[in-house]
Image (cartoon, rainbow, N blue to C red; front, top):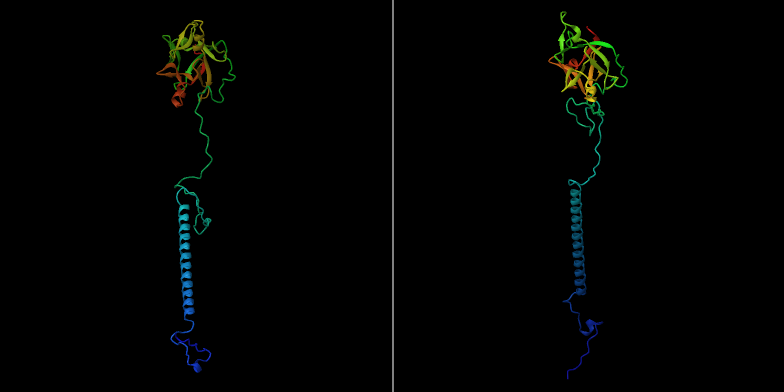
Length: 275
């Protein structure tokens, strides 16, 4: 059996002939472990920094996207109000002031639309409320305003505008003005032989009273104001808005018109009888 040799004590290496192994530096394993830990720490720090920077980039991109979406059409965005400059010598105009076209005036309160014109029978100052009743035995001749030398004349059963000649009988130019058959506040006109002036088919003619309500209405005319001094317009009772006027010197009923010609053609002066 091999002999067991006792290992010399390390405490006295030179005396007992033992020497330490110098080929291996003391603590090499510990150094390797410490280095490995340091490298792992550095790698972990670098990784953490890279990850945090990436998250920051993502957050910034999300904020930019949200900002872009907020300013998209149809969404309300809020911005810092810009500074407003007052008008002055510097020539700076007020920000946000409305731009006007050349010659455009400042806006004013809109005026109400004008009401449509009404015929004299419905206008202000119309004598319909309390007209004076005509005298029952007044003889009148009726003279045209725009043809003052012409009067109503009964000719062949119709009423026309004709001039008066000295040799002619003035009886046909004179009519009796009486209270209206259909309205006592209005007028009716009769001839010397007792016929009444009435409209038929809107033409003025002389006919004897047949006692009907239609005849009374056709023979009644109400006095209305005229734009000519001392003249009147004669409105039909059963056709309100239609007035007696001359056309081609023949008397007829026509609807009211807003024209100077109509106003002159429908204006007559009731003067003393020529007969």
